[in-house]
Length: 411
Ligand SMILES: *Cc1c(COP(=O)(O)O)cnc(C)c1O
Image (tube, rainbow, N blue to C red):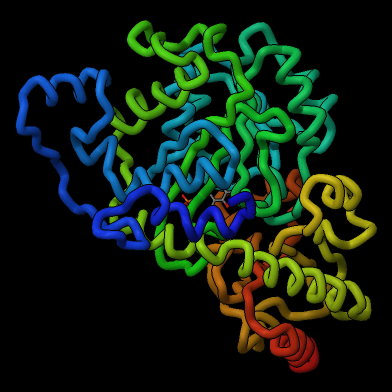
């Protein structure tokens, strides 16, 4: 089976699940027993495959890890309790004090906050405009170990120079981490632009229903870990392509402990079955809604940010890399409009944070997710006081257009 969705919906069954169950059952046991003490020792020593303790391995979570690995076309994955845990733990496991990271300046807000905290713990972080590879290249120092970018940035939808940064990282021997949450492996596989590791928040499009938290990091096979100085001696054995992901599981997941629960893994697996169907619909809804907003008079809308609009600076890049343009858009309400009245007039779109939900969600950016950073940073990031982010859902498009149209008319 080659198709994206075919692989997801058949992966558990074809893996020889207990009793012919079509879903991997929820294994809630924390520990696993052995009849033979030699076998226990062999599993603990990694000589034999098997399960030891639920913080680092679980059969239900393992089945999801295999599914994500197949979706990303990678070599192995490690799941975490949240997307933030996947990012933070990966950095913690692979980097040391004195190491330098070049990061996109246009990141999910909590990731920026996390990187700033790492900056105080002895890592050195440079934030650059990663829509142009030159800015990344200019920031590299003798201590740089990693480049970190997202695909489509939230809320202003900038698209990193993903292909060129991949080539740069290959030439300079740097770990290239791509947070693929906004695109998901359905729209984009970071492996194809030379990324070393893909990160996905499973909370968003992959699970899709806004009812479960999770995160994952996937080894994509493009980085030569045998040249990486931060791999512990203990993990420099076996296939060197897997040294990084083994260290992330041991030093990261096992020692830091941000494990995904079996029930959550089960819920995410169920959601993942319809990723392609949902996201397809969400992308086409977002395209139509973005065009509708862009056509509003200047007395309604000041600006619309969506990479599927031909005047978006990375429109061509989006077409080449992703084909479809994702389901996040943002727009600035015209200054004569009242932001609160407009938001309160919406009846279908829900005032809420989160994104990637089946339901359309709206949030005033400056007053919520970008409140803590302050006015100076908001200005640098191009976050206007009237900016509204829309995470477009799977509703019937006529209902969304009517909802936004009525909100303009009544505010
Ligand atoms: C939501 C999000 C995260 C964090 O994921 P959680 O599961 O909420 O911890 C990381 N990166 C991006 C791009 C996100 O949208």
